[in-house]
Length: 226
Ligand SMILES: [Zn+2]
Ligand SMILES: [Zn+2]
Ligand SMILES: [Zn+2]
Image 1 (cartoon, rainbow, N blue to C red):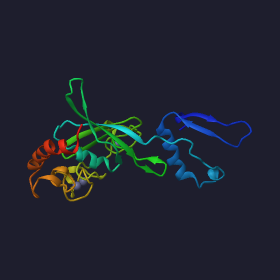
Image 2: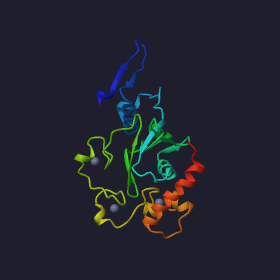
Image 3: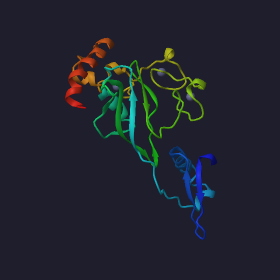
Image 4: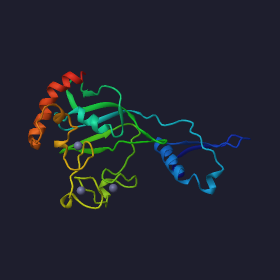
């Protein structure tokens, strides 16, 4: 992976090597490969030290196409990858009209020395949302591979449960887009904003999504000033 390396500096008279990478992903790839290879003989005599680390505070843009999708639910979903550290903001144009996009400040979680990245596309119920931020790796939307994009993806991935190896039509179990638990869809999720606030249990999908809209007009004013 030499094309990831920006510089390899070996200061004269020292036993040190300073490696820098073109992009933050290069550094992450190095750390994850090193974790696998560190006990091999060729690495045993090296002591590896992190000089700089990728900044894991990200300004994350979330694009929605449904103005009643609860921002609380997006935050609940983002929780899997990091901590939302500021009150989210609606992205508005010069006339103060909301574009349907949100900005979240997210402190991405670290797994060892590797940042947990947010996928660039997901579903919350029937709503597709897109996620962007600086340093986000370009991965296949379907299977998460860095070697191809979803148009060329040969992996069968179920849209209902997210498992690989079967399609939605032959899926036996439903999995919640929001909390990741099996056995209920997003519209019945006990962690969703609509269900926590004002929808009686057992409501239909339609009733719940109307509930999300009603909840938003009161809830968002109270809980999310912007
Ligand atoms: Zn793929
Ligand atoms: Zn499935
Ligand atoms: Zn759920």
